[in-house]
Every structure is written in structure tokens, then in C-alpha cells.
Image 1 (tube, rainbow, N blue to C red):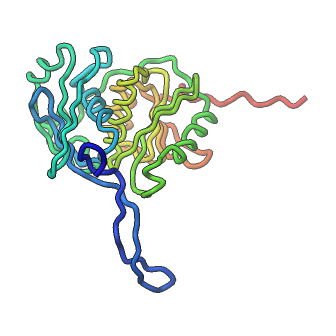
Image 2: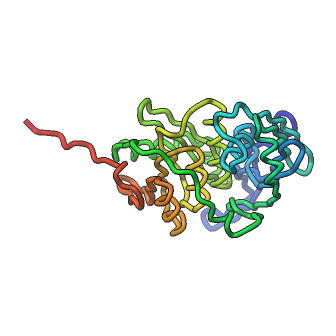
Image 3: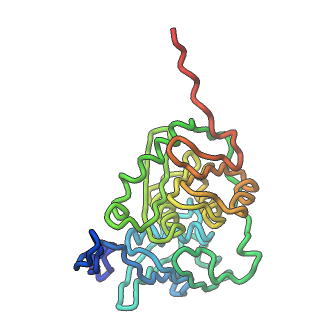
Length: 277
């Protein structure tokens, strides 16, 4: 257990390891996975299976990407309460957020890898995200370099090789903020919370993902305000349609120096060729 009774994000697990054609006792570091309950004003909104780390960011980011809070409404108060059953994140929404939440209150339960479980209607599953702003441009080579920096920042994944990373990169000053989780959408929620709690705007940067791009990642990135989302794996067809509709540039299948741009390619520019005298 870590401080406050919250489980440690990484644990050592005994195993039988087969090496050189023989089985022998061994041990491996693996990520923890625990139920995380989100409550707002005393009402439970969701229970997600997640890595118990960066929980203040998780609570704030989940509220933002679920549309329960807006970036300029003020800080979200969070109390972390751990028990044998899991961890409860008791939050209070700022401004008029709590009243609006009561009006749209719902519950959902989501296993790892699912960001839309328990919604009340098909319409909610395909809800349109807010449009992202225009004018942002990024050089392709710098985008590649930013993605290449992610592995060195993924402390939990270096130990376990079992978690996703979500990062925000700002080309203007090379800022890179990264969060990790066993669930890709959880990692992005934690990243959203980190940006919200530090006052960093998502409008002038790129969301980087070490996963495929599903529709909920596009929806969450749009809530952050990011004009570009880039990932190492392929997108789903619905993710492409959603990114196109909200004006977001979707870059995927980033492998080495290569990638594919599925929507709004005008934001990705090639550097000017060097002139040889």
C-alpha cells in the first residue's frame, strides 16, 4: 500500500518463469488495477477499473472529458478515500457544475479498455464533441520526435510493459506532460486533469497516445481542445468520422519516421528542404 491506503501502482508478482527450456521460480513487476469510484456532491457517477496513480488528475480530467465541468469554472475539489474495496474520489464541481450534474445524473460501470459502458442511449455513445480551433500547424519531423520521447517518460511502463501512455506536447516550448494507466481512456482523462489543474491550454498542442484511436479518445481530446491527436496504432472508422466532424487532425500508425494522416492534413507540414550551396 502507498500513502493513505491507496494501493501502489506497481506490485511484484511471483511466477514460474520458463527460461532456457526450464521452469524456475521468478518474479515480475506488474501494474495494479483497482476499482476507482467517482462521486460528485455525494452521488456516484461512475466506477472504472484503473491504475491507482495521479488520482487528483483523474478526478478532474474525468469531470472535464465527461462534460461535467469546464476549464474556466475553477478548481475541482477532490478527497481521496481508500478502502478494502477500492478507492473513492469524492469531488465537488465548481460554479454551477453541481446543479447541472444533478440534472443529467447517470451511473455507469466500465471495465479496463472501455470508456462508454453504461451510457443511457445510443445517442450518447455517438455524441458530437465540441469543435476544435483552426490555425495550429506542426512540422512532421517535430511530431515524430515528440512521439519518440514518450517511452523515456513512461516510468510505470518501463517497469511493467503493460500500461498505456497519454501525453500533451506543445511545440512552442517543447512542453511534454504525460500520464499512464492500464486503460488508454483513463490515461487520457488523467492527462486532461493534469492540464486543467496546472492551467495549461490544450488548444496549442498535440495529444499523443500509445494505443489505437477509438471514438472516446477523439471525444476526450476535443474536450481538452487539442487540434491534433496522434497515436502509434490505427484508428477506428467512427473515430475518423468524429475527428473529421469536429475539425481535428487525426494522425495514426506512427512507426519510426512514418505515419498516416486521416483527417484535416493541412495542420501537418513538411520542413523546408535544406539548400546545398
